[in-house]
Length: 609
Image 1 (cartoon, one colour):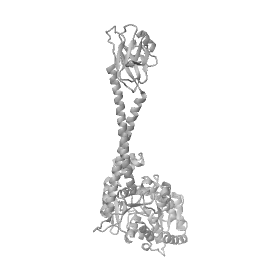
Image 2 (cartoon, rainbow, N blue to C red):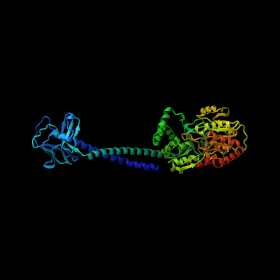
Image 3 (cartoon, rainbow, N blue to C red):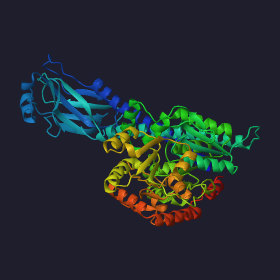
Image 4 (cartoon, rainbow, N blue to C red):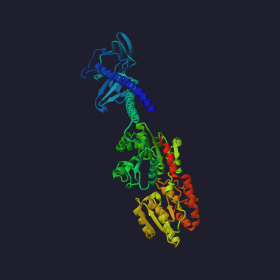
C-alpha cells in the first residue's frame, strides 16, 4: 500500500512536469518553423527577377528586405534554364555562360553600409540544381544583417544586358534548422512520457482505490461464513495428484479456513471422500485446439514479460472469476500449488487486492519454469517445496528469494498405512507399477527390463500396471511386440484401497522414473512413500528426489536407469529375501522420522497468516 502511494505521488509530479516541458519545446519548435517559413515568404516577396524579354535595366537596382536576425547571410543568384546538357555543371562553365561585368552589391540599413561584395560567380557556394534549372551564386553577403530598413543595392558600371532571372534569398542557419528538429522530437518525447506517467498515475490510483476498498470490506462484519485462505490449484481432480488431496484433507481436518479453488476441471471425476473444490472453468486445458497449440509454439520466441502479459490477457475471464471469488469470500491470503498459471494468477490478484500470497513448488514446475521467478516469488510471503531437488532448482533460478523457501515434504499419513509385519512368500513373484502412463514414469524401460528378466531366468514373473495415461496404447503395443502379454495385467486407475490391497499382494514396487527431453521429472512420488509405509520393497531410479527416500538402506536404487540395470536391480531384490526384510523395516523407520504427513500438515497450517 505504501509503495503505491509513493508511486501515486511520483507519477502525479512527473506527469505535469513532462507535459510542461513537452508544451514548451513544442511551442519553441513551432516558433522556429514559423520563423523559417516567414523567411522563405520574405524571400519570395522580396526577390527581384529580371524579365527574360527585358534587355536593359537602370542601375543601381534596389531590393527592400525586412530585418531577419535568424539569417546566416543573403545570397544573390542567377537562374539559368534549358536542357540538362546545355546547363553549366561547374563554376567555370557558369562564368563563361553569364559573362558578368564587374559590379558590386551592397546591403544598407538606411544610409549605413552593413556589407558589400563584388558581383561575380561565387565559387565558395555550390551551384543549386532544381529540375530544369541551375541557380548560380553571384554574390554572398555573410552574417546577421539586421536593421529597420534593410535593402540591397546592385550597382553595375553600365546597364545590365543578360536576360537570366536574378533573385535574392536568405542563407538559413543549419543550427537553427537542427534546433527546430531537435525541439520537435524532444517535445514528442516529453508528451509521450507525460502519457506514460498519466497512465501510471491512473493505474496506481485505481489499484490504490481497489485495495483501500477491499481492506475496508475486510473490516466490516459479515453474515456469511468467512474463509481466510484461498487454496488455488491449476486443475482438480487429477488421478495422479494424490498428495494434493492428502494435504488439502489434512489442512481442512486441522480447522484451517480454506476455500479450495481450481482454475479448470481435472482429468478424472471427483470421488465422494475427496475434498470439495470450486472449479472456475469446467473446460479442461488438457486438449487444446490446433490453433491454440500453434499460438503457444509461436509465443515461445517472445520475451518473457510479453508472454506473461499475453497469458494474463488470454485468461482474463479466469482472472476476473478468481478476483470475484476472493472478494465474495473476503480472502486474506492466496496459496497456489505449482509454479504455473495458478501461481501467476495468485500473484496478480493478490497484488490487485493488496493481500499476501504464497506458492508451493514440486518438480517440473520449477525445473522448467514458465514465468519469470521475480514475478512469481519476489512478492510471495513464503514458498514451500516438497523435495530437495526442487529446492536446489529454486535456488539456482531465484537465489535472492532463497530465504523464503521452506522444505515441507508431502509424506504419508502413517495411521492410514499400517506396516505389514509378515509378508507371505508370493510365487510367482509379482512386480507392481502404480502411476500415470506418461514418459517420465519410465514404463517403457520397465517393459524392456521385464523382457530381459524373462530371458535371463526360467522363473515366471508377473507385472501389474495400475494407472492410465496417453501412452497406454503405445505401451501395450510394445508389450505385445516383446511377447509379454501373458505376464502383464493392465488394471487402469483403481481406488486407493484397491491400490493398498495390490501392494499387500505384490513382491516389490517398480519406480523406473526418468527425466524427459523437456526436463519433466518426478519429485518424490507419493506411491513410493505409501509402498514403503506398508512394507513393500522398492526398486527404482534416482532421478528427481527419489534418492531422498530410496537408498541402499531402504530399497534397491538404480543409479543409471536402463533396461539391463533395472533388470539387475529387480533380480537382486528377488534373490535376497532376508535383505528385503531388513530394508523395508529401515524404510518404515525413515518415514516415521522424516516423512510424517500429519506433522508437515501442522507446520503448513501455521505458515498461513
